[in-house]
Length: 362
Image (cartoon, rainbow, N blue to C red; front, side, top):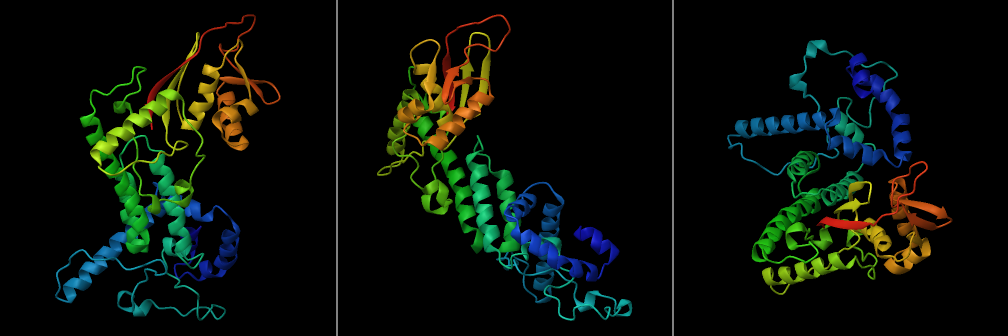
């Protein structure tokens, strides 16, 4: 819309006239900030605008340095959250000047030639909301990444620095550094414990933990999450082994596991099918309760699951709903679930064993 209005009216008078009600509408939407940050950090027109702004800033800075007789060295970029890129008087053709219409605002709130990113960031008049939203989004992406690769997120951060400055994004830099450090720490631990392997197949080589700096990550992650929740025995044993190995590598330091966070790659094996999925540890723990349950058919109520896992109703219910959607569980009566030991089929019932194969716990 902004580009279309500028094509119709390059001076920005039309955009200025319609922008006020649009700004007020966007302020009321809860997803505005997240949508803007998502567009800035993914392949989109808005990210291209951000890239062009960064290149324009670098060129202008280099030119200014050379004119002042100083070497064009890297420097701290200015805080541009409220700044706009506007052509100077020297860059405009004086003969092409046209006066504004009589009904135009003589003192607009923002320069009419502000770039698209500045217009969007300026909706709230402050960069703090965007910084906070980016920190939350970056944390989600890093925790949901099954590898230690941070190349793309590092590139995004460097681009955002040109708009918001280094100081405002310090926490994000620490988060990315934590991932890099975790890769190095995990490599050291595994090299020293090459021969350590659990009898059931869950060894240190299959684990890829993240060691995080608590005070720099979003508060939702740093809170104590369900302290009485425990994973199935094979994973608990693997965590204990890794903690011991970490203590040998990092003297006088210990890890505090966030058991509800992370990813687990599992293979659910039935008689007539198998299912490979990547889920959270809580998803895995819910399904493991059915594999350990006695009786045929295997049935557990929601209350029994909550008691075994020592987790709240809403959390367990949501994880059970995931397995129901996958066709692994089915609700036989209200809040009572049964393991689907065979795929639904007409005129036949297959009863079979059920196992879980752990691939990569985090």
